[in-house]
Amino acid sequence: MSDSRQLRMGMVGGGEGAFIGAVHRAAARFDDEACLVAGAFSSTADKSRASGRALGVADDRAYGSWEEMLARESALPEHERIDFVSIVVPNHLHFPVARAFTDAGIHVICDKPLVHTSAEARQLADLVAARRTVFAVTYNYSGYPLVKQARHLVTSGALGDVRKIVVAYYQGWLTTALEEQGHKQAAWRTDPERAGAGAIGDIGSHAEQLARYVTGSRVRELCADVHTFVPGRRIDDDVSVLLRFDNGARGTLVASQVCTGSENDLQLSVWGTQGRLRWRQEEPNALLVSSTSGVEQIWRRGNDALCDAARNATRLPPGHPEAFHEAFANVYRNAFAAIRADAGGLDAGRTYDFPDVQDGAVGVRFIETTLASGASDRKWTPM
Image 1 (cartoon, rainbow, N blue to C red):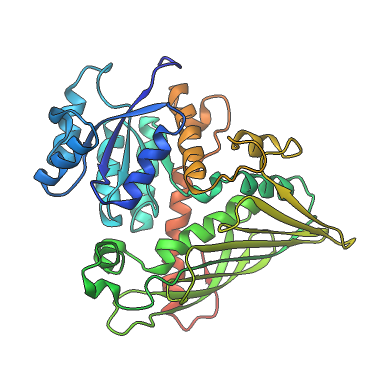
Image 2 (image 1 turned 180 degrees about the vertical axis):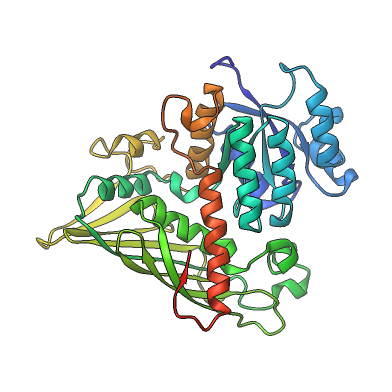
């Protein structure tokens, strides 16, 4: 594959009015490395084609269904067909769509959570390995420069041995029964058939992956309180979890979408024997680091003192804020590097810094275990 040409992008879902579809398209185009050429943008054929026209996709490549898209793209010459597909449909469709495109040898970038069940995740991971395709999962918060700096500080031993990990994601948009008022996003995200899980899947999966990415520690066992506050809602909207990690650390995770007044308040604190760090998504360009000496530092993105991964994830000079779209674009850019290597990601001669299908599978297992713990009287549930 030529390193200079733009990658040909396809999309399933993400039609007109879809927030996350627009974010994925912006992320893919951010560094001029990809161009949207095909898509099945809606479950309704007419809407899909209308979205295609609005997005500048040729009429003959704005498909009425993802099945039609896969069949017709696969029939095209290699130099014309899509290089990868972005999957931004509701959660219950992730597995069939991702499985089909992976089986056809097409690289995949999929929104999170990966799939509904660990059995599906194992099938998908095995298929990715067999087809030697690149598969990225857009846990986009791992793309922030100072999250990468936080990871570097932990893995380099700057904090000493990690003892305590506290991560929380507070939202308030589902404080009322928005799903009963015709709100499209609320309707599917609170539908157990389509979403699979509520707050723990929608935002708790982000929190778990952030903690795992920064610390390198995986949850060994947990004890969860899973609750639904809004009357009539069929899915969790508030979750609190006690965590025990494989390195001996202890921690907590909170994922709530009924915290009135909160917007997207994802935050992580890590304490070690030599210091502590704290990062908040709503203030993403600052990382607070404290030491046992009483000295507190604020690390800022864009500075030469940062590690290579943090500098590579930075696009603007110091003082010019970078945030959500840039972080998303970093996941895409790193996945593109693996696609261009044309050898299937991690065994292509270097390590590519993006969440992959295995990361997605761990996230699914965490969601399952949390829900099982919440439904059980058992104090600790192993992952």
